[in-house]
Image: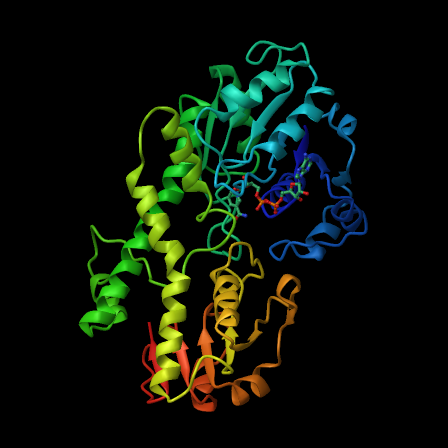
Length: 415
Ligand SMILES: NC(=O)c1ccc[n+]([C@@H]2O[C@H](COP(=O)([O-])OP(=O)(O)OC[C@H]3O[C@@H](n4cnc5c(N)ncnc54)[C@H](O)[C@@H]3O)[C@@H](O)[C@H]2O)c1
């Protein structure tokens, strides 16, 4: 079997590698020639895919920028970005571009699967008509399905193989073809009745996280007023063995998924005169979180007799989550901008992020910068950092991730 993967990013590259590791011939296509060139040189640009694993593929994965190279594939999986526009509406332009190019080379009997996160109806209403411009009919001449990606960058306890894969085809035979494909790389396939159900399944998973994170973030704000330690409460509630799932408060949500995906559903709901109030409320609370963190920083400096204007503030961790280097939508970026507006002299240390080009900053050496900062602010708690030492060596520390639980020090403030 020959598989094409369109879009070789955080989702597409690990998927292409998973197929190739199972011995399938894989054609990886990306619109970015730098990625195609890097892969041709055997160099990975995704942290979860070491270059050594590319070398071990023995030529099973070839990278290209040409859509005609997909015509020999039995299946083509689309993993392009689905961001929001500036007005926070779905931006399907990457999918439309990829589908338009694919339609020009689509072959009879090919299976096309969309993996990009999107609102229910996209595969049926948006992707299908573009692919049918080929003159082939979906469900009759070619197969079409949606199967959401569940990758969690940096996670090692669940892999593509051990994470169940949801699949919904346009017809029963579309589903069957997609199940056959994914059975090569996943132990468990969960069939649903339509692409629409599969699309909404992914959104439910991410909205569930967004709403629960907002709930604990709101609780953290209330705890500050009440003088109760929110971490103590979350830890204690987590001892309940049933009916409770732990979520931690923090400086806000980041990444390509949680701050974006829920709004795909609220957009679709509006088309049906329906308002998804949980989504909007969770988005409002989570987006406000970096602003609240900056107020906490101002207060901490004030309590130490310092003004934010002119203060040296070091952020520890700027990626959107621990253990990865992805800074997309990271709350740290907003915190840096807000602190700069207040006149703070901001620097950062992050073992996974060498530089933040847009902010003209590069990662400062840990030891020197901790010692010279007026305030060290733990925004993303990378596991390789010794937080006891950070507290010992700093004038003042504010911890937005709760990693200093268990440390008591007069120079330490926790969210
Ligand atoms: N990153 C995650 O953790 C994650 C998890 C689950 C689902 N998703 C979803 O998967 C999709 C892809 O996300 P990602 O994080 O891999 O994005 P990404 O930006 O890392 O990768 C997308 C790739 O698609 C390429 N591309 C864009 N337009 C193209 C075109 N017309 N033809 C060929 N290639 C094109 C880009 O150059 C890029 O390399 C999104 O819908 C996202 O919501 C992401």
